[in-house]
Length: 577
Image 1 (cartoon, rainbow, N blue to C red):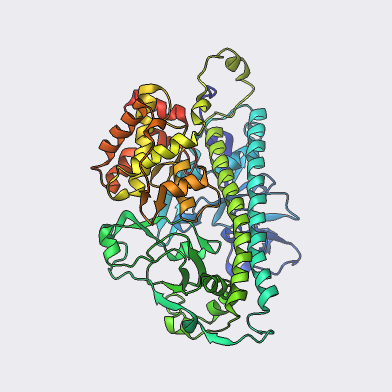
Image 2: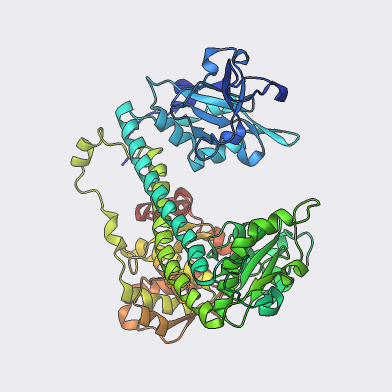
């Protein structure tokens, strides 16, 4: 329930202060008498980065307001398009500091708005996207339109509520940070296990026999024949496409991708099997990740495969020790790159296969812990996105709601719809996949969403208590999706009974294939009718048509990756969406 508050303009509760002007020659060493720290765009990171701070003489600070204050929001106001509007919180600083001309300060009127509430609102995903749209491009620089920023509106509860909301969001963010730190510790554990078993990979103190990388497995470049590589007809289909950045930013295992190829795109590329080690050779050098699903990738990535899966794991970790050296040594023209010959001729110590297998088993145990930690982090990310979305729509306010809530005891509790019936859910999944052309995984998932909407509208309940989440290509039934990922080895735990799931369905890169007929006694007549209606609606649609069809008002209202609320789905019935 939201509070009926009139939105206020940002300019009514906060103002911008522009930075100081100076030349690069005016920068002085730290500790110079009469100097002050000067923050610039480089310092604006997720948190204020104090690792590389410039100093200038205090005379360049013309006005007292140009000194940073605790609770300011430091904003990158002149930067590349994708970074304009980026901001960070100013904590208590160790000394006096100002800020340069490419950044600005958003300073709250503390009698009207809590500084932390302002920062959390301004740094939220939705507002950051809006800010980038306010950029005025000149050559390679985009300048933030301050006047348009000040006309942004926000729902502003009383100050005590603002502080409470900021505290809730900060607690959620602290949980995310703790989980991220735990994942980082597990990442370092992999290298520790390697050193314990095999010794230093460069010094080779255990005198393992030396082999060329090209002799211990098969190395080949990815394929992307068509130019330009991003031609529209190549993209937007059901075939996964992993890009260099997704390899560089993974945690050693590529569990997701954002790009896809069409049938035309697939014909000019190559599908690599799960278990392939991806190695980047352009821009990001020697970054690695093992595919957890079959995928295409471009020729800026090399694929490595070996007879033994343990060898792939061994090579991945061995390369992690060499990555910085290879990157520093890479020749650079327009961008750094290395070629296939360099990789094939790399010399590595090669321990016996049984020892590599022991290493792989140990790493598998670590990865199971990482999967659990990662799943927890995903849940926390979704929680934070939901809390943030609700907070700035006026749905986390408390003090003005107590009497209203007490006065409406018959308000519907939609949580009753989200009790997963795993037996019914498995049969519904088998029912849909068996009636979907070519067992199309994407289409089957979308069909379940359409069927649930139909049954909710006609019968007042979901078919099996599924939770649908707002992912990039539309609503996704989370339990069904997680079950499919379990079959593909991407998840440790299954929402459905594991043996029953394996006996019922088989997963390929883009298919979910039923291995038996559904038990129709588990599905009521109304449930089968809704499933059939959804199958008939979705069957003739292309990938793009189905994507557009399911991007309804409930989906569009939901933050990325967050659960779609049942009440928002219900609201689409009256609106015809």
